[in-house]
Image: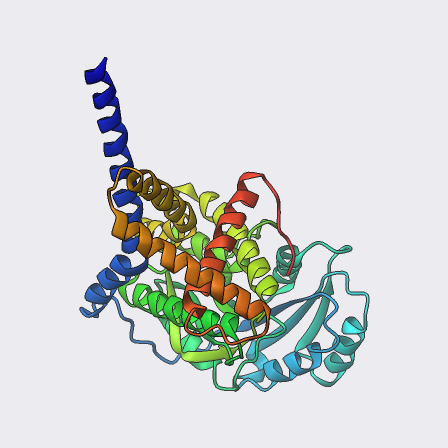
Length: 389
């Protein structure tokens, strides 16, 4: 009996050690190992493109729901783009707007015939509004952009130049977010710089499989109607990759957008994006097959899936480590984790009180993002749909 007891205890301990190191190893690979691998590969510059002058017809698509405060400025931005007037169409898809959005669009369309208003039947959601606009589009290139996004006049040419390569199916801009005050804003800025860095390296290598919904351009021949529960920034690039075309991030095209700088706003945004992107990624399972799409599968698993699973890995590591501490093993590692989470709690409390969260802000923002990842995945598994803007 004593031998059996010791054997069972040893197996339990070995299992906890394995779970701990697997969880920590996967987390370290996701946030550091994968970027390092991309950096090494991107130094070869073998996948970088050489854009040339290219001027196809373009249809700009803007989905809008009660945007009377911003739609005028958005349309002025689009009208000011330096491009052949006869090759540009500007479509505003009103998703059941009940304010003066449609009136403003009609007024501007009288001054600029390139501006057109289309409407959904009632409130259908952003994706369905984009689908309706795409049906009315005449351009060879469909350019999707958000109302809040500000586009500089010279942003279009660098994007369209990439389409001179017949293998390029989608081009996305780099998004810049103005600096804000507080730990949430600082953490968002750091996270987005990290994300943009990864996307640019994936683009240079030729394995990018995501885009920024603030501004993305896709060949009309490759566009497929978007399911209402999936976001355009997720599903359109996946469809492009599925057809064997490249997704490119153009560093010379920089647009500006805003982020919510509150804890609640950041959490809601992270939950929404995770839910839509998780379901969207698994709606195209062929892209996860490394035999058919080796580069795309690697980027999707490493960049997306493992990142969204990070909170579950961290919970597994903490629980496994706690069990080992009871047996006087991995004590220093447990204290390291405890100090990190304590710093995150202190950062959270100080942020809620309106106090400076430094030097706890990064730990807090990392944990806040991962709480959003976790709740987003739970929401996806419960089958809850997100169609909001």
